[in-house]
Length: 87
Image 1: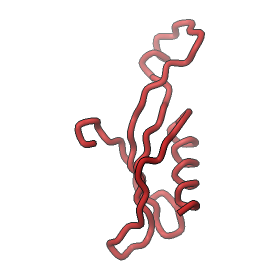
Image 2: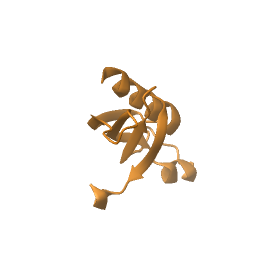
Image 3: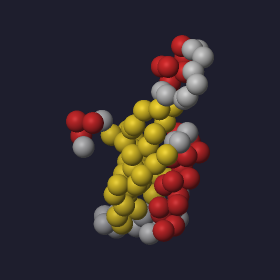
Image 4: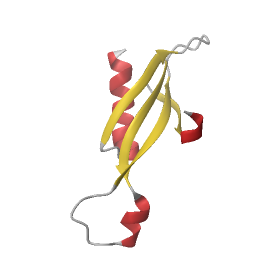
């Protein structure tokens, strides 16, 4: 489980630019493939504010929730943004 947790953290930090993250759910996948399923809340830079090019003293972050599926080798098989209504 710790390997799966580390793989999810690395993926979200590297690929999505997460500044902070909290894994809210992690469980083995039961449908015969092996692997893991996880959900995490992350803080990422707000792209709309960034595109405005305003001089800010602090970066503006927004909270998003993602699901991540890992295969048995802890490689990301799929990921997706979870809308607030789905939670």
